[in-house]
Length: 463
Image (cartoon, rainbow, N blue to C red; front, side, top):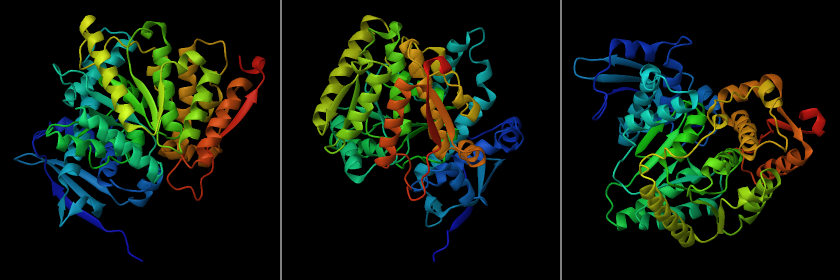
């Protein structure tokens, strides 16, 4: 049996982060609670492990337990010492250029968040501070491009999709690329990679040499969904909530492909925001699409949304089946409407400041057993508030499936228990059961055990 190969070497940045202060170096090497070493090691390993079929952070960390990364300030520039790094990140002993770039993107973002952001927006309330923080991180990563008409399409979808669905995501990306549109995804495999791959071909045909393939991740998920090799702008946000806000502030429209709990979480996030009365007139094209044969996925998702959030939520999206050309045309027309609206309201093209995001969608949610059991899942709440609570429930399921703390919590204490009004719990149970049946929860299904239990309760018990 072939043993795993490792490489130990030193690398330097290509064109950025040539110098670090002693304080920054110490912060990166500090393994204490307040230090950045653990995050830096985990995110760096994820970048080096691109192409892996493991989608559990715990399994990745266990497999490469001997990996280490050290940082030093040499007389010419910063130098990273890689110890027992995955050999797949190298060719003839040299690190692949894109992976090298991604490593220093990790370094850039973790340092900025860990050392500078606490002074970026003094005097702002919590919600404003969060939005400003997201803006500052994106600007520091050079993701903010002023004076460019809206052209960035966010593509959401599962990392665990079949070949037919993956090929379809490439076709949609190809059609959007032909129209000069750029792609932003969660940076991982599957439906996050396919649209980028399709767009690279059409951008080449259109002689677009500066095509953008933006990948936005966060430390809790990146090891389970390593950046795919097409990403040319990697951005690491501090947590899932700021990652989601970055998508909707930076992107101009959203295409959703089939996926699992994480994709449903994303759908609930954008729908909950668009349902708020302050966003009723805000144009934001949203298309759910997949190939022929994926109808069952969209039927289940649509049924769940109508049962929980109502028909008004379903009016905010369009479902297109097996028609990449139509998806691209709908998105192109939608972005033209976005452009006209932003011109009329003097809104920036590069960051959607006008989009109102309630604090319920911004506050980090820690998926502990206690927090999952205490979610308020009842009708009678404002639509956006119920959507926020449902989003948190699905975020917890994602954590229990692939994130290290969530996986360990399930191992120690058993599945999360989610309870709520029967009229909400039954559709949720059906939705999650369909994801399991369609093999959408994880890549490796041989030993998959649900990390959750659905417990319908009487209204008076949960209100």
